[in-house]
Length: 241
Ligand code: PXP
Image (tube, rainbow, N blue to C red; front, side):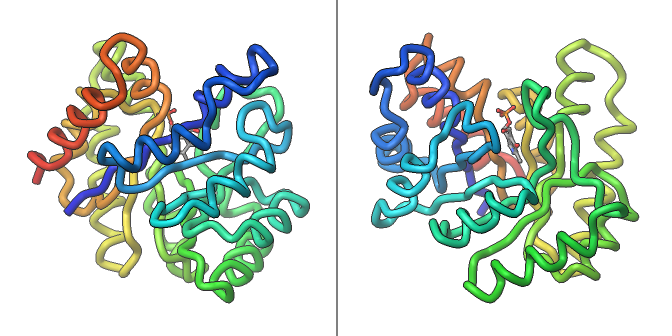
């Protein structure tokens, strides 16, 4: 069964815009879980622009909720994540000036450090994932790094589909990477820029086991409500291969 992870960072973005308490990301985490999300994703960014330390701590202590915490390789953030102890960790690249995560990790440059970080989380029995571009050589490095999962950055595919440009090559890249990772025993996830159309398209790849979706899902919920939008995404995921 494929799973839906709901990224609730933008609930915190909206709360922070007022500097007050509403809408509350802790309530959002409980609520999306209740209405069908398989897990909740939060990104504790170095600049804390949305999720704050206390949010992450409280969300990770909610019973019967699987939390996927996205973090960079920054030493202080890694330390914080080890204290918070989420169910899952996804290591992502982070650049202060970016609006959102712009691409996958540079594994060739950072593999030694990333390997050390993975082993710290594995020791605590936390499922660990690496956010990577759809590159076969990166998948081979992931195998050497002994990571549990990869999350393939789908932003390029999403942009091509949205701008009605040819996307077959990028789709094939994601397909081939998913197949190779699966053969190597690495669980495959996908995320970034996904909407109904791109989720349906990627649903054809049977090796993708989890979709992590944020911005579009939260944005669409302004018009149609979280229950309806989550139900729609679940239906797309369930009806895919
Ligand atoms: N997966 C990862 C690793 C991400 O960094 C993000 C963005 O924070 C997402 C998924 C969700 O992307 P979007 O908000 O575009 O759906």
